[in-house]
Image (cartoon, rainbow, N blue to C red; front, side, top):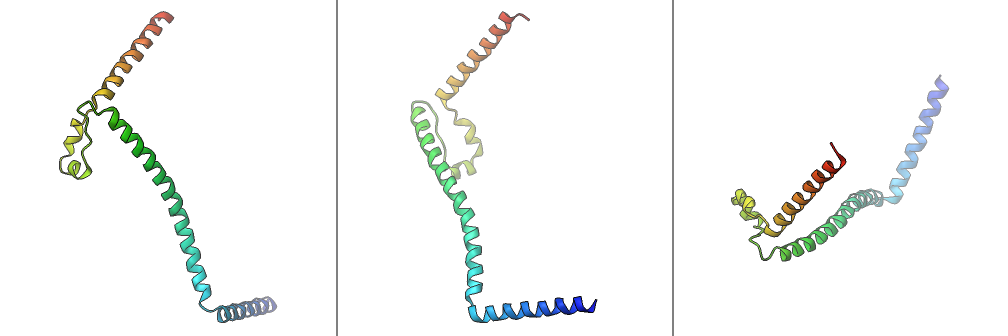
Length: 123
C-alpha cells in the first residue's frame, strides 16, 4: 500500500518538476499560446456564422429590391424601422396590391380545382 503511494507521489513530483521546467524555459509564450488558441476558437465560429449571415443578407436584399420593383405601381411601401417603432400599426397599411391579387386569384384557382377534382372522383 505504501509503495503505491510512494510511486504516485514520486510521479507527481517528476511531472510537476517537468511542468515547472517547461514554464521557466518557455516563459510567457505558453500563456499567449493558450489565449491565441481561445481567440481562434471563438473567432472561427463567429466568422463562420458571419459569412453565411452576410451572404443570406445579400441574397435577401436583392430579392427585396426586385420585389419593390415588381410592386412599384401599387400602393406598397416599406416603412423604416424607426418609423415602425413609433407607429407599429403602420405595418398593416403596407399591403402589396399585385402580390395580394396574385395570391387571391391563385387561392381561388387552387380551391376550385380541388373542389372540381373532388366532384369528379365522386364523394
